[in-house]
Image 1 (spheres, rainbow, N blue to C red):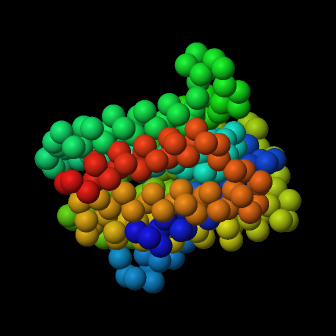
Image 2 (cartoon, rainbow, N blue to C red; image 1 turned 45 degrees about the vertical axis):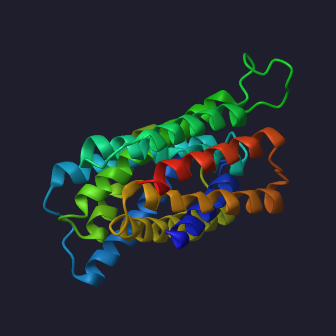
Length: 276
């Protein structure tokens, strides 16, 4: 899960670079096509069937993954990198709830307190004008909405992966994600598509596509070995990497409010995942 966190943070870095000119849905489409090719080659190399045993759940995992990816890439084009990653990583709070409903994992008062803590942290990061009238520099609320929707659908994807790992090979689970995302993003991307430059093609294929593929495989394996909430909590390392990339490449230093929100979300995640 630590390696997956690093790869996801690098993917965010490359998406933000590509998103300076390219529409977010076009990045989703190209990323999906690239990782679909990688996934198919890995399946052939490992001698694993792409069909799987529970096609309906595999397609559902691909669909919620597509929604999560669309929200994340949209947010990355509108928000600072570190803030986007920390908002998207509220998914452990939602994972705890969905894992309880779907997998029957217990939820207690510590988990509920952790969820509340995380949501308060989101407010401090977003700083909506109707609550912070004296403050300036609040985040774009459409971008915040995209990041939070990404977190909710990520939680659903994590729980589905936990369920599917009982019967499916990790490479089969990973394959259905870009398969569904390619089909879903195609009609949304084509009307506003912009032909990438040579450098942008390199960023999309060798940057976004490769890091996303490695991250998905490592995350899928990790989720099969830990409780859902605890495994996803490791993804918070993405935020530390995101702060570093934001400072180095985009001159994005999170505000004091953002750091306070991050701290609350970290505490909320610890309560929600560590106590399980």
